[in-house]
Amino acid sequence: MTEVKAEKNLVRVFLDDDPKPFAAFRAPVRFVLDTSKLTDGPHRLRVVARSTDGREGVKEINFQVRNGPAITVVGLSDGDVVDDKVPILINSYGSERKDQFIVHGSETPKPIPSWIWALLILFAGWALFYVIMYWTSQYY
Image (cartoon, rainbow, N blue to C red):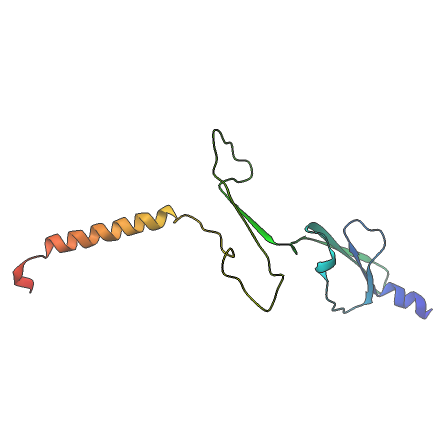
């Protein structure tokens, strides 16, 4: 009879579409999911818990694994319609070594956003207006 109660109060954890759980615990549970053994890309964690009265609850969590180097592409996005020649910048950087950090190549250069240019032009215009309006000797 104790085996039935233990089975009813069990939390099983499945990964992706595997029919066999990779872990089974008694609630409450705390564990560490090691994603270093998973392939990069989308995955799904499915938790199945059974209450003491035999009811079953399921929770699915979709997540993305990126253990490999980060890849940044500037100049082309998903769904873009392009023609002629398209300049593309591809940068890849990872953190294989924890003891040193290489600055070269770790940042992807991006153009200055247009709203910053507009703000800079507005400020320069205001400063020019201020200089023209108040450039008299009576204020000095």
